[in-house]
Image 1: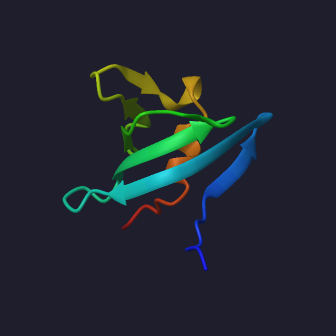
Image 2: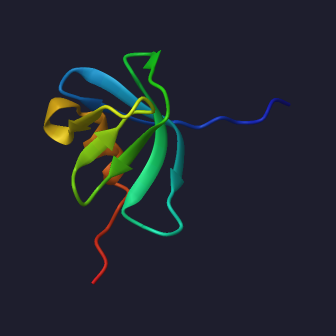
Length: 82
């Protein structure tokens, strides 16, 4: 029997966004390293900062969540502590 593979996928504004791989930072619990796909197209692993609501690509380019919908999905796993 083949191992099961589960993806966390959601339909957001007409796009299918899936989290393929995700790791939370041990030092900063509001930061994630995640690989996502949008409509079946994989993006490279990026750094998601749920406090600043920003995404940093491997090449250093930064974008805000409002310009990309995958940040909201990744950070939906984050719950503010306090």
